Length: 328
Ligand code: GTR
Image (spheres, rainbow, N blue to C red):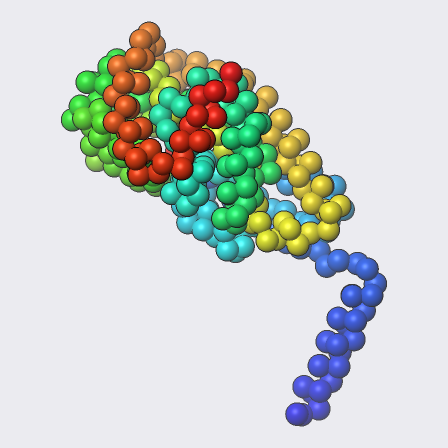
């Protein structure tokens, strides 16, 4: 071994001993993924999360949020968090379903009666089962965000499932959504969120489905004419952290990170309530025709085969479906 190597090994040893015995943990740089841009409620909520983490851990965790999906599309970013290449993110549970079976509960169309009903399920036994399974898969949920309900938009009003017949509809990556569209006679087209505006504009797809803030924020309303309130999916979102990195923190740091996420989620829900109303007003003012669907019964009945096939292939999911249905 040459002298320089020996010297550097000695220095390294001394440094390790020093940091082990000084009791000072090294500061960790954490990156957070966010798909949204300015003008969407989740962006300031994620900024608030970072501020709270940085303050409450006194800089022991330095969290930086990367907005606008610059760290990759959602399925890729989820894999990155699972392996710990990105520490944390604001994710929809939609694309988590293909990775964590239990999380797919929320992707069954019309499983929840309303957003408050969804939160009651998440806060109960059903939410615990989902959280445990997500944590086992490397995606530990720290808090839940509101993402309202998803409805269809296209160049025509949709009032019955028949109106979806023959339409090419963009969906997120999840077999349940392709089956949902096929059950209405439409042609599902799974695609990354970042590609949807162009696909709508060029007619690669005839329509898509989302909540008002996303419909507005990335300009889908500029390239469609009608938003039809089918509200077929109520999908929560999480602040999810890499399980191993979270579990490796001291109990104090874990509490600080969890508390920061919970506070950021409360803030997000407040912002959501105001800004989703505002997004609807804004797109209407820009010329979008919004149609209510008084009777959602035909959409719900069209999902009978989706449920039957899904529960046949995944009989163990019946327990969660029953829990959701029994939750008042
Ligand atoms: C949004 C959601 C995003 C993403 C997007 C999509 O409502 O907040 O995480 O899932 O929908 O449709 O891909």
